[in-house]
Every structure is written in structure tokens, then in C-alpha cells.
Image (cartoon, rainbow, N blue to C red; front, side, top):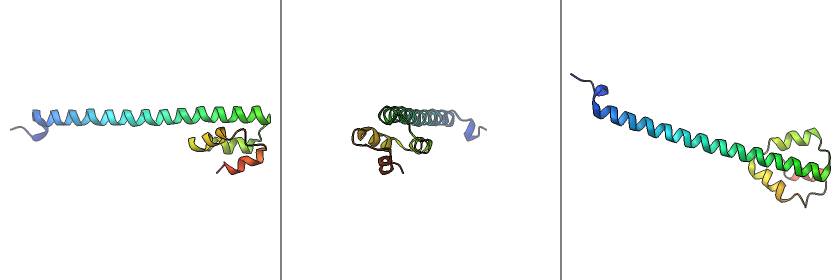
Length: 94
């Protein structure tokens, strides 16, 4: 007598579930990878713009900038022409 795990129906359902699980895992992994890539790109642009505007950026500011999420980095980039002193970055850094 066949156990339920050995039946053809169970095997098809199991395989379909595995396929769906793998697809979902790959989608989530890709989303995370895209988000991370976007954050790294924005971080690079933020630092480059700040260096171009202020020449030198103290290490403590660089460290804090690197901790910021995509939203904050976008805010800094959008406000780059309004930031006239490095101390004004305090308004953006969490």
C-alpha cells in the first residue's frame, strides 16, 4: 500500500509548491538586490556631490551618511543646492 507521500498527486502538489516557493524566494532576493544597488548608487552620488561642493567631508559625516536609507540620500541630493554648510547636513542625518 502506498503512503500519501508516495502518491503521484502528492508528488505533483509538492513539486508545484516547491516551484512557487523558489520563485517567490528569487523575487524577494532580486528586490533586495535592486534596493541595495539603488542605495549604493545614491550613496555614491551623495558623497560625490558633497565632495564637489565642500571639498573635504569629515569622517564622522561620511560615516553617518553611509548609514542613511534611500529616502534620506534622495533628500540630500534634492537639496544639494540649498545646503550651504556641512552643519546643515544635521537636518538630514538621523
